[in-house]
Image (tube, rainbow, N blue to C red; front, side, top):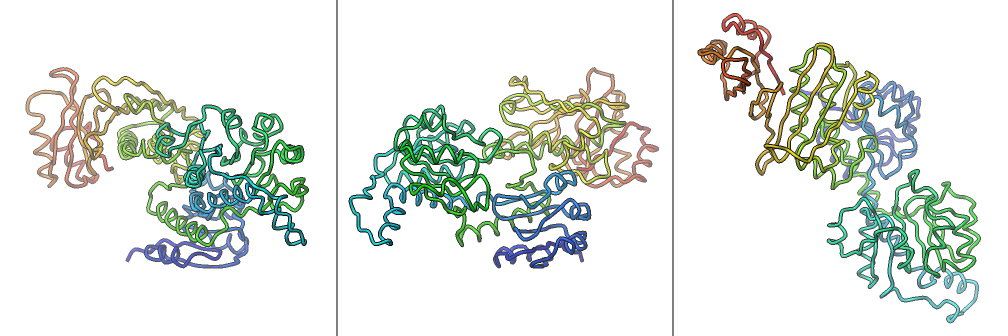
Length: 530
């Protein structure tokens, strides 16, 4: 009986998510485990799921000999040594999409509270006041909501806002024209268009070097007077001092801030203003969001342990859902090209050129490059190699990777060519996909045109193109009990050197290979297993 892979869960976790994992894995729950105890036990586990109570340090990761994946619900991963995990090829997954509905609803709630002055009226009424004229709000219908960052949450906010009668305009240079069109949201060509037109501005950006301090005094001065500003994304995007001053001088009528430069936030200049609603990062704090996050993490951990690509990895090459969908038909082909190259090549590798020709040249192909490299590098190191650490390992070994793109492709809509050079190696292979099922095909091997569908077992033979050779090959394999499912021949000139590719129905072991060489006289043969 095959032993199940083990997963350790260190915090409260959804019962439904646990049941999902227990169908396929051995699950151990150890709430409140110390870092020292975790370090002592971690070598037993292939998967680890944590929340905030446990720190996964470099020391723990160094002892994690079998660990393949660390999962943490939500979007943060501050208590995981990401660099050490990446170097060891451990995939770190989170669940950023679990909070989409909750965060969007919370954004709308802040907008409504600010527009209707609910927070001010509540405080005044509780203190004995009854000033109905003092807290006149504004109607949202017909107003313009400007969304900065049109990802999943920004899109959901727009949908809900439109239902309230708001007009929506969004700025995000990384989103396709189709997404704006499908959502009914006007595209802002520049962020200044948002400042000029929006009565309400909602921020939905990740915190990066480019976005830190993005909303400052200069940008605020470009906004309409009496604008409402809401941030439920990340602290530090708005300069808090500049926001406070803008609210106090009346440039901004009110602000809703759920995230802060430093969290937990015990003290802030924003607390001094009655017209700023401050909440302790509650955007995703709903029962439903937490349940979704746990289930998403369970499914992501399962994917990694099943050797599939995780949807929400924080240390894989970055790509959006749209980008992944556009290149996914080529993933299997790239795996096959990498495996074929690694098994045909001899000697060391110093340079690898990967060229994308035709329509595929217009796509973001960093994922495909990593897929190819992963299959190649597994030959050149005893370390575990995967999409997480392959680029780092290739760099450490001094291998130069070059990505080439050409929108022109002579004979194929899409063509991927892989070429490697080094001591004892000078080899190229190419392939494409065909049909509605995107079937991979090898197109050429070492400049021999040879159109064949990959199979689990294959053989490639170099020989002189003279009469009788095909028969000798078929006879020799037949006597070994090896059935040839398909045969493909490529040659450069008549009666010169030829390359034969064979799809085989069974594996050819080393003993069978030696017998084949003796019986057929062919020495230049490579057995491939995909």
